[in-house]
Length: 218
Image 1 (cartoon, rainbow, N blue to C red):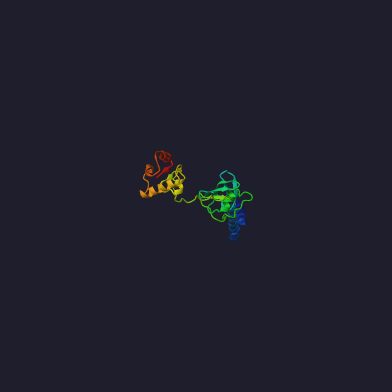
Image 2 (cartoon, helix red, strand yellow):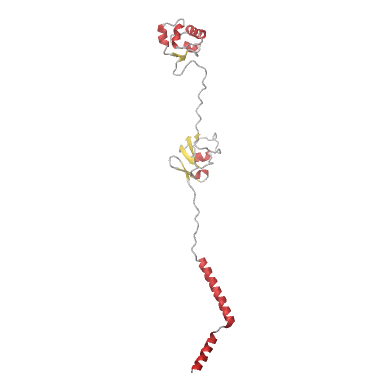
């Protein structure tokens, strides 16, 4: 009974022995299974998708109204330029532009020119600079006349040392004759040092001096 049992066990174990070829086949199958599991685990790993930063913006006029998107005037930042747009535009005031913006961008940010306004005098392609003023449809004010030699001092007083004959003649109580005497006296004494020197002019008494002293200077 024991011998039969031992022989049967050995026969059973021999039937389960795959032999060397079978061991190799099992090893190959095991390797393939491990590789497939590794690939599936790699594909199933969690991924971090990068998010691209989004940039954009609008040029805002000083009133806070959006003035357009895109182009040089569509972004703002620490390096922005501030330009004043005045005259005949829809939204005059300050506009904020990106560096390198043109006059055309400044006009667009201000809402554009009013209907019928001619902008041909503006160089729309010129780059703007921070702090500049762009006037649209308004002619520049005329330059003040250059100061020339005149005997009228600030405040409307007639300067006795620079006045002409006509300017002296315009003073009350002074005619052409007395005006010429004042000129002769000025030349003779090398100019008036004080208004009181008028008393030395022939024809100017105390009454006339009182009348002139507040209208002249030296």
